[in-house]
Image (cartoon, rainbow, N blue to C red; front, side):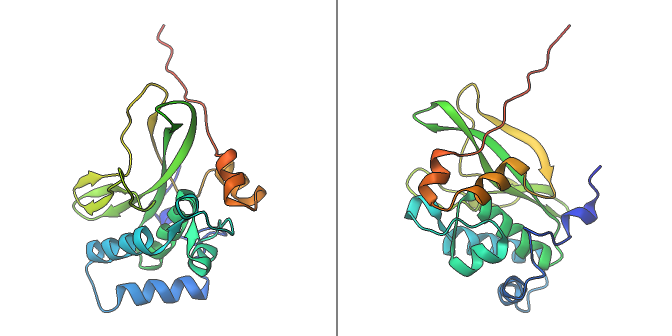
Amino acid sequence: MTEMQDYLRPTSIIDFNHSIVKEKAEEIAGDIQDPVEIARLCFEFVRDEIKHSYDYQLNPVTLKASEVLEYGTGYCYAKSHLLAALLRANSIPTGICYQRLSIDNDEEPFCLHALNAVYLEDIEWYRIDARGNKEGVNAQFNPPHEQLAYKIKIEGEADLPEIWAEPLPVVVDVLSKYKDYNEVYQNLPDVPLIKNNKC
């Protein structure tokens, strides 16, 4: 069972113990003491300053938070790793969530989309999506109201309920295996939905 401490630890991917991540986390927070305001600033930095790999057609493919920060680009998965790292570096519990979404035209095939859940006092877990805004995508930080990049629209799509302390292995595998942003796009990770069978 995942404990709250697990959402505060550095990992090999959410590597906020790396100097570049630690320094950026301190720079963003500055003298601010309010964790909600720190969370907003970290969210807006990753959403607005880190370019989505496919939107901007950028390489290299990044995985670790430190790589995302170094190269200034990442898929939604990698951007969620960086946001988790910046928030954990500021002692704000943060996990990774996933949606299952249609890739094109509101039909099959489907892929995972990564976002974050941050634990804020008085609000508890609050989901935020720093994939980067564009036409038709307007994710905001406005707790307790949730404003994500995507809504579930068709059968086969889903908000997956889990809050993970580390990224899913299928995500890590894709970002580790492919070296070009277009190769990642052709092989986006997915998981099957488990339907409850009623007796």
